[in-house]
Image (cartoon, rainbow, N blue to C red; front, side, top):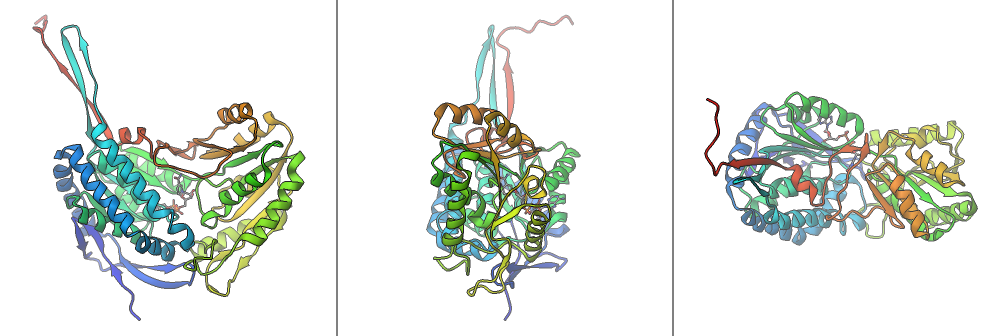
Amino acid sequence: MTTPVYQNFINGHFLANQSGETFAVKNPATDAVIYHVEVADGFIQSAAIQSAQQGFAAWSAMMPIERSRILLKAVALLRERNDELAKIEVLDTGKPWQEAQCVDVQTGADVIEYFAGLAPAQVGQQQMVGEDFYYTRKEPLGICAGIGAWNYPLQIACWKSGPALAAGNALIFKPSEETPLGAIKLAEIYTEAGVPAGVFNVVQGAAEVGQWLTQSPDIEKVSFTGEVGTGKKVVASAAGSLKDVTMELGGKSPLLVFDDADVSQAVGAAMLGNFYTQGEVCTNCTRIYVHKNIYQEFIAELKTRTEQNIIAGDPLDPEVNFGALISKAHHGLVMSYIDKGIAEGATLLTGGKALCPDSAPKGYFVAPTVFIDCSDDMTIVKEEIFGPVMSVLVFDDEDDVIRRANDTHLGLAAGVFTQDIKRAHRVTHRLQAGICWINSYGNSPAEMPVGGYKHSGIGRENGIETLDHYTQTKSIYVGMSNIESPF
Ligand code: NAD
């Protein structure tokens, strides 16, 4: 059976490359190739820039409210096609239908809707300076680039294009080579909604295509989602042309469970923050610090619920709530971390092995895994694993657990479970993380800025401030009196 071949999406339509080079995309739940994609060669790259220049000229000249109306049409189309798009995400990523159907498309649409609403409200300032005055204009940057990770492919494309387009920029987006189809579907939807040709182009490929975007002198900004190591390369490369950067990188986030916490709620949060999307979420709370007074109760409930409530299998089955990891290579990496955990002396509370569910026997599944008897210096406690592997640690002192939680070069997220309102705020104010949840974990509404401290990122996505990251301020001074010149 022949599989479809998708071309790059440039200037409002599909465009064939000249090299003929393609890559294959596999369904992680079946190990089968589901389609091929053409790589963005030099011809495509030039066409992407040329059309983005033309698209930018047309789009940035429109009134913000006109752009807003068009983006809202795209939002309506995204919601109408929720199930079709969610299925693409399930086949590309291996995540359960149960999640994709109610989260991936909707949270992407929410963000475009939010920025479409904000676009006409963006205003400059004016101030009198004696008889003279100045005013400021918020102007778009020009052509921006977005580079995405594979865990939330369509959502990432929406989260980057929403503010970029609302502010009047053109965006050239490169999805991960593991999950390239969602961004193409978004490009089709933008085109159908009336976004002018060239305003949202999709280029396909792996690191080389990403490198081209970060180096191109015609691109003003790069917004990147991916690993810390790749992010450092992107920042270094972008520096060559002094690009603005937004970096959404990895994490190793702590969850602190105090002895007055609602234990069942905290167990639920720990499971959500480790097993949702089979552990492939950047904000995951992979270090769970539990107060010694409730430790036994916590791990007993955690073991029972993990062993009884998680259903791994064909991700398209609506009963399944735990999917396959993205690739064979990533599966191998996650298993190697589990081996290191065992070798370094941690104890398996549950899991620790590959899974082979009857409904998806060739999928890249790893059992939901919980390690206890962990110490802060173990590899599994220090490094981002990006799989369903939780480490549980014990504490008995507030200051000490805050010190331990902060003892990492990463700082994406953190969580605190306690009934003591003063402690909740006192502790979160001292945690070095860009996103903190109190008696909650993982919620990320469009209104709330998200991004990392330390090596977990630069800049923010979502929330009002993000629109500023896609504009530049022009100050215009107006002389009302005669100029004074010594010449
Ligand atoms: P990755 O860094 O391997 O790849 C990310 C993207 O960068 C891909 O599109 C890839 O093709 C591209 N790329 C690779 N090398 C490049 C280079 N030298 N120059 C430019 N582009 C290059 O990350 P991944 O494996 O796709 O995603 C998993 C990582 O993403 C995890 O670390 C996770 O924590 C992180 N992530 C962070 C967030 C966040 O919002 N903070 C969200 C999702 C994922």
